Length: 247
Image 1 (tube, rainbow, N blue to C red):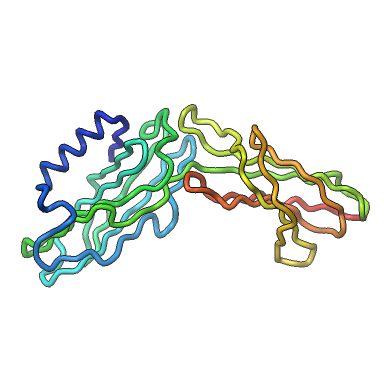
Image 2 (cartoon, one colour; image 1 turned 180 degrees about the vertical axis):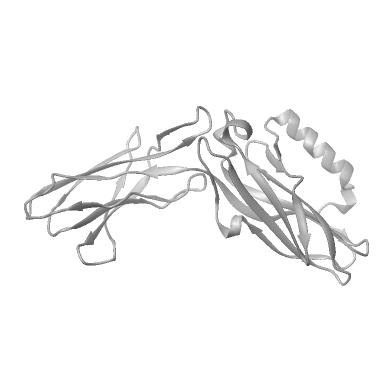
């Protein structure tokens, strides 16, 4: 696997692609080969933090009367991001490529990689037919997020004010630390003791440091949490629940 990170290198990648795929054949093919399904990371977004390498697979299923022989699968996204791999195996009609992304090697100094990525796939059939498809599927490549919560005072008298604070942070590939995610809407949710259902009480926006703070009236024993729905560059994040005893 390799990640190309600069405009100059990305142009080189495009040049190599052009050598492998004549312009007249780009996003096309020969014969009856057809791609029928593309799955990235089991259908989940690819989320990368600040230290641990992330391994995921991309599977391409195709059909041809003679059977599928091989595939070349690569990925590209924002910031001139480009990933390919030498680890691709075919079984029956499905070829699966394994990618490993190490944030401290492949994502150094660029949060620009986060966002919508695409799968490019070349599939060879056993009789010489082939198909080449650019942007065969899109997926989200995201910066990991954390969400915290604290409700106080604990315990609290019924009808009194409860202050609920928290912080939404996300991974930075610039310095490999977590920083507050600013100006984001986060739902404050409550689950009454004995229930399993959370209800959104209000929506709170993070400040310039990613922090959250709001007040509510204490009415019953139960659990409080903050829940962030996520964006194109950052996954959803929900805090652990904080139980408050109401006297």
